Structures are given as structure tokens and as C-alpha cells.
Image 1 (cartoon, rainbow, N blue to C red):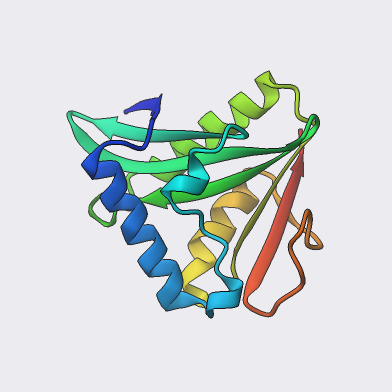
Image 2: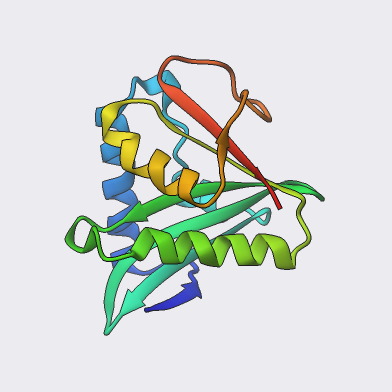
Amino acid sequence: MEIKIDDLSGSETRALLEEHLQSMALLSPPESVHALDIDALRKPDITFWTAWDNGDLLGCGALKELDAKHAEIKSMRTSSLHRRKGVAKNLLNHILEEAKRRRYSRLSLETGSGQAFEPAHKLYATFGFTYCEPFGSYVESPHNVFMTKDL
């Protein structure tokens, strides 16, 4: 598996992000969907990666700097064709290593609260993330879960 910075211009990447946005819209009410579109992911405070294997796009993830010591995981998604192959685990490990390299002291995330999000909650917990209060501009909602990890 090769994980590389992606400029979001490829059709495969655009299709995966569209799948991600559509899925989030189906699973959560509009006011609780905080997934970023391509234009938002191109902002300078965000680094976006994709994971590939033999030309196949496996998944994606991003790191958004909130301040000099705190960053947020965004747009974690495994392609529906490549689930249960360790894609998310490898992407999350890559993002954690990059966050440490950048000397962030804290890494946080927001995700959904429904049953469909349980595998993500378990993955993040395996990596040492714990549930927390909303951070940044997020607000408490029954449809969102917030997690954080000190680095």
C-alpha cells in the first residue's frame, strides 16, 4: 500500500469523496454532517492523502491544522471495494506519524454517532483516542461523536 499526498484532481479521488459525502448525508441530518468537499479540502491548512495498491484507490484521509499544537483528522474513508483490508488502520497510522512529526500535542476528530459509525469508533479507540467534548467550532449533538488523543 502506497500512501501519498493527493492534489484532489484525479477522477478516482473525486469519486471516492463523492461517495463519502453521499454516505454522510444518508447517515446523519444535514446540520450534523461536517464532511468537507473538494474545495474545502484544498485549503492550505489541510493535507490530504490517498492510499493506493497497484493503481487501485483504497481510501483517503486528511489532517487539518487547528492551531500550532492541535490538528483534526478529516475525510477518513475506505473505498467500499476495499473494506476490512487494513486501509483505515494504515491511513490513521500515517496521519498520526505526520501529526507527531509536525509536533502537534493533540489530535482530535468528529464523526457520526449511529451504528454505522461503530467500526470507526472502535478503530480510533484502538489507537488511543478517547471520547471528549466538542472542540473548535463544533457543538454538542446527538448525531456526532468527538474523540481526541494526546500525542
